[in-house]
Image (tube, rainbow, N blue to C red; front, top):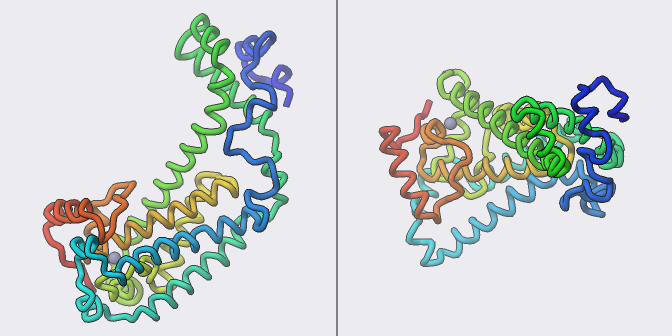
Length: 316
Ligand SMILES: [Zn+2]
């Protein structure tokens, strides 16, 4: 895009005129994390990686904690909340059923992802007109600097670090804001839907109560849901967050992976106390990354329990 011939402000035109510009030369404007190739990994496309990532993270993290659970290592045993016998006695669902239901949900989420995510040539995304887009960012950085600092100071600032500001805004600030916005959208979506499933008797009895049959958590039980709930709460929620934040496929790899990890920690962490609903109400993002093996979790549990008044789960 030819910025100087665009309808941008005359102030910006003046600023970008030689001897300086707000966008560096192509060799300098890529950040370290940008890999100019069709896919991040040679053996899998970015789209497939974004769909595989949540599954790998879910089962990878779960297996680590399952191994700790089974090994009964003395160090971790000190922090165990539910005794193994208690888990067997209280849970109204077998491990095998939990695994099967989680696989069903992951199959549905992968299928929707195949449909949802762009099938366009990945090179188009990777080699899109970054320079042109950065020049657009430069226009706004220039306008904001002028408005906030006045012409003299803004000119000095843009002359000395205008390129770095543009580069930072394009490659870091906006992607980080997109990620925070997507997390907010997903959290809000899940919070209110989950809350509604507890207040609506029909939904609780016929859909959400299934999830609460798992009274003491298995490490891999975070996604044990009724298929309808799994679709609405997790799969659709993530798709909406992805859509609302206008992320690229590569950004989706991080979003899908992180939201799985976050959801895993939230759900398993909360279920360790048997108060998923109530602790969910008291949870702020990001949640404590802790499970049965964390003393921090125990402290948090006590404080949350005292805030919410009870540690019993609500059941329909
Ligand atoms: Zn619930």
